[in-house]
Image (tube, rainbow, N blue to C red; front, side, top):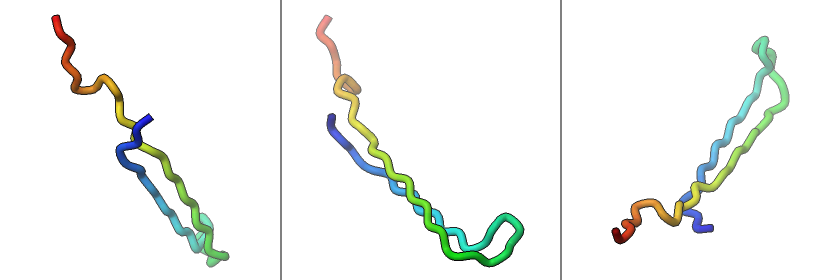
Length: 45
């Protein structure tokens, strides 16, 4: 598997749904974007 690039999303929340201050919470999501082996390849006819 060839990884072309990765995506990282970081979200920091310091209040709850009512707007009350809370301890900081950081959520992180990361996933790879993989190369497709046959993408852009031409096949002989």
